Amino acid sequence: MGGHGVHLIGAACGSRSVASEAFGLVRRADRQPRGGHVAAALLEKGSSGGLAVTLEYNPADSPLWRRCLLGAALAVLVAPVGIQRLAETVGSRAEWAGVVAVVGDLWYDVPKQTLRVMGDLLEATQASLLVVAVDRRDPIELLSATAATVVVESVDVDVEADFVDATRRASEAL
Image 1 (cartoon, rainbow, N blue to C red):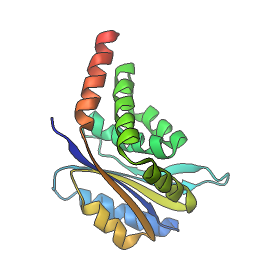
Image 2: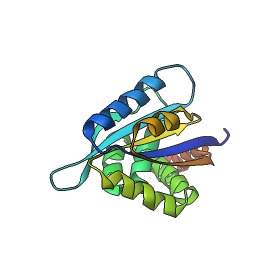
Image 3: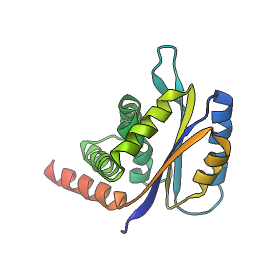
Image 4: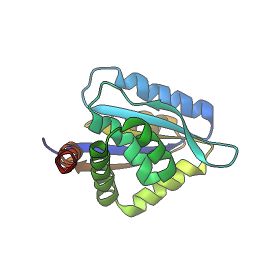
């Protein structure tokens, strides 16, 4: 298992219609065989001002570590939303240990200033997108052409190995 090019892409879309259009572009692009992994969440502000995921694309046939990446990224950027998504994805204590490892990868490898800017961007507009792409760069170009503001951070981390190792260690400890 080697490192993976993990790209976090935050996009402020302004309106739900623009965000939905961008979400659809990302989703359709992922259906073309290119390898890698793409997951996306459309976030909207509710009447109380809190963010909620109103659309999510996270292929169920992907390995668990990949399905957890979107929730882990959300947990790092918008904690309540990310934790809720992860609670719907992860079942066991061992899997939670893997999630903690992935959250740690993102927290320690993505510059804190970028995390602040991206988190603020997601909360600043009525509708925004968070896309996590693994070993793929095409969503960056799609969102750059569609959204009003895009923040991208790319890191090379071995989230797969860290997830697998943490779940194995936790399983052995139970």
